[in-house]
Image (tube, rainbow, N blue to C red):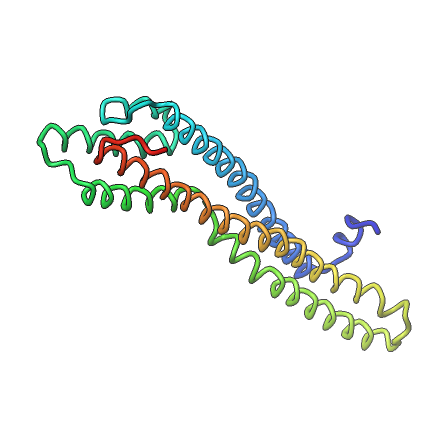
Length: 215
């Protein structure tokens, strides 16, 4: 099937709908690749942080900075915890509750930044099939109009118009299916990383406030 020829043969409304869906697809794939890279990088960085905590024989406020590497999201998160712990320790007011509250707020903000464009992917997944369906309905109406003008309902008369109409539905599904799969994957991945981050924070809290190394 010559897709370009089929596109060029569609009417003005059909071309507009196909171009609109194509634009939605491009933005959707941008968010998919961007989030794949970002989430995998964060997951690798989080695993590295767990290994660093394991290697430390004794975790305290002064050596918490050793977990900071560069200017990535996790390093900034740990840096904020470290600054709070150092200030609280100097004032003799370091408490697990205060550290947990700060960690909770910072973790929520970090989790929201982990995946971008999820709202857009959800919108693509839910609306693209209907936009494609609108193009199909419009194309079928045009096909019936052509039948009326030609006064013939032969296959040669009907088939081109129906083919032009159905390509809109196909394009809508082409946009919606990857967006839906990516959205579900990123939501589950973000939740999984959030739980791992919770474990890391709880471990840091316990070791810093009790002064004991967890096995």
